[in-house]
Length: 283
Image: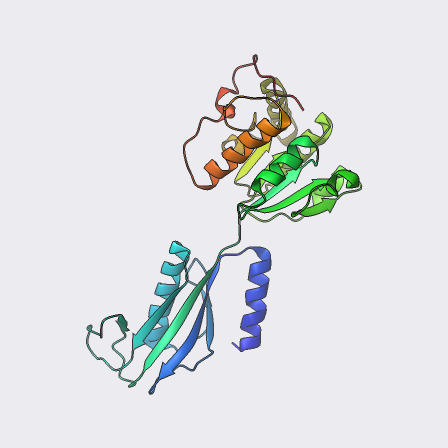
């Protein structure tokens, strides 16, 4: 595959949020099947595009690319092409090849950042964006009220003329969603849209009382004709840390998002969803 094609595929994969590793030959001494500048893309399933030289070197490169992807860290490896056995100089990977040289390959994992879509630029949405803005999470705030969107700096913003435009919006897979608009009808429409489109979400939160989210779940079952995946539905949203001001609710949701992101156990308010009283959280 030509380098220009590799670069184009790399750019497309980054844009789509597809995880991969870019392996690049950065140095070479002596003889060998590779050349400095050669690139190869390796995807999580082991599929490779491009080449770093072929043969045993390439098989090792694919394996080491997958290791780099699992660790999420770039790494530089040196490959010995002069040894026929399994032993190579310290810090060097033996290939068993007899080409007579050495090759250095740099592995660069490219993993899409965690993406958060916040529906609602009101007090909670604004506070949530501010809290999470410096965590490395890619934040997009979506609302029909442009004046409120303009008040939120440092994040991606999408102005919709009508909330129904969200039905055609492109979302990155495995994203986080927080629904906190100023309308019960809009909240349900967005929630239903995410489930109806079978968006592969990692987290969907609705800022709502237990009674309200219970009503929403029943509506989803009736209108979609199937059991919604409640494992990804975190509502009432946030951790049970106390407080019911917009800033405090945003803080509890931010903490929940971080906990879910890293797979940490936490005291989720959704665990109390079966209760129907005592929840002060309203939109």
